[in-house]
Image (cartoon, rainbow, N blue to C red):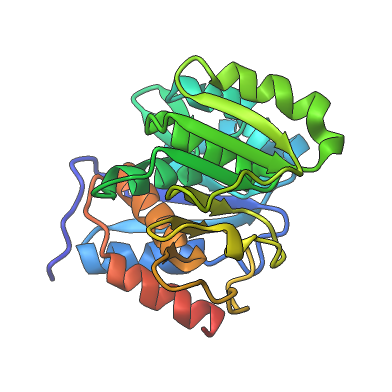
Length: 273
């Protein structure tokens, strides 16, 4: 009772892929969302190595799967195998959300889309952003800020990555000014800024943040409490961003509205937080 059947006689199937896939909450979250939305949806989780991804996608295509959610370890390989949704995604070089559109698989990155959406939701977004980190999360955040038309972005990362990250930032600068700041933290005390913490430690220079700054935390460890922030600074935690990512994925794959409170409850139950 209450289940809305799709127009197709086939059940919608979403496949979550990674290696290893143990500890991934995607199936748990998506199945709960589908039940709450009254959708007849099946979610599978399978172990897939990067070298086998092309074969796995061909199998998903043959079996008529609706879409794929991919672990970070598969992002760059998937980028080579599917079409992309956005010019900025082309620069990112990785996708984690793949949707079927008629006969074509189209990839996007949920973190990039979540950062873009978050910035659009701010009533008065600061004009500058500083991203700390050098991995995929940091780069996806930079791409999301560019897609949201943030005018000035600094990427703070180890100087050893200058040869790689300097030209990468230059490729993004047609739309926003993006520069690589090797281990040099801009002085942020004079004006509010967007600060993205994509590191896995507590090296964020909290004492250098002006009031009304907006901090986004992207750490993968959701069970460790983040550092306390000075008064007057707004923070969007890692769980908040993960809620956005799952909402974007569910809505992209099903065209149904995601219950964000349910996503948060599911994540807190899954990770015991």
